[in-house]
Length: 130
Image (cartoon, rainbow, N blue to C red; front, side):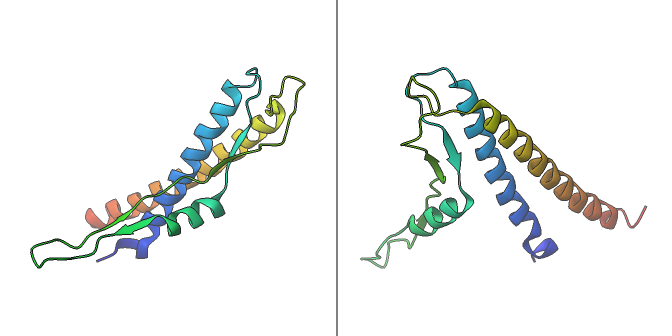
């Protein structure tokens, strides 16, 4: 039985994406004064294509062997290689990073609020509407 039609798992994926993006933005902000550091970003499309490519499956050569398939999710983090924002080769624009952080925080909080609402609905059903 799949509660909420898979909504919670999709919200979880969204939270994973927002968390990775937040870590990447924090890393950019932490390295704002590091010479030759290139700013990184997270692309949902790149995460999706990387997830599709990274599936490993085993060939069963004996009846006693187990079939298995491993999916490795490579994060869709990429860096701006040819972009220099400062003369020391640093590619971090602090204003852009702060704007990205604010936008990502709003997105993350919206997902948390939505998943919390789903769990509250489930809790209400379990308690019989009380």
